[in-house]
Length: 205
Ligand code: GAR
Image 1 (cartoon, helix red, strand yellow):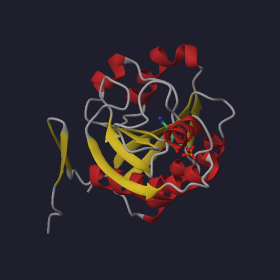
Image 2 (spheres, rainbow, N blue to C red; image 1 turned 30 degrees about the vertical axis):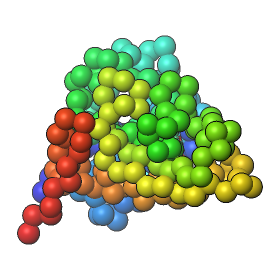
Image 3 (tube, rainbow, N blue to C red; image 1 turned 45 degrees about the horizontal axis):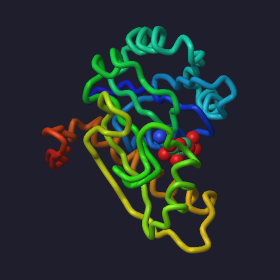
């Protein structure tokens, strides 16, 4: 089976990116990370890409709407993964890659998501609210913010003593399992979107 060409979009440290790089190198997913693209020149994620011989591209936020789609098409990208990418994607790009963009979010959507909820802010909001569970969600991207069909969700407990750092670390452990698993299924053609739901197709034997 031909490998799916993946671009991973990042803004920060890139621990989720690292799990994808590792899964691709081990052959756990039938995909190849063809490029890592960041809207932050100093993102450590770009360094992670370079260390593994993966093309690392920085695009200034102001030029994102114009340049991102050009780069993706130039590189024949078939799947776009948002792994801690903090810019909102242009409508045109979302349309062009409908059903082919996957995002990871550090809460149980539809809680603590949407505009302004990213990174540490998500965990702060969950702690302020006093929820007893939080978690991670992997979903397809549609034209809204964090509103597309859900592929995987998994909960983690929230403890009275938690800080946004301790909660983030607990959620990240889950993210690191769910994201490569979802990308792996996509690369095998086993994710089918039916309305708001995602059906996981059985493995072909
Ligand atoms: C992750 O927790 C990811 O879920 C979150 O940013 C972090 C990136 O960490 N994404 C969002 O909040 C998107 N709304 P990483 O750079 O170590 O993968």
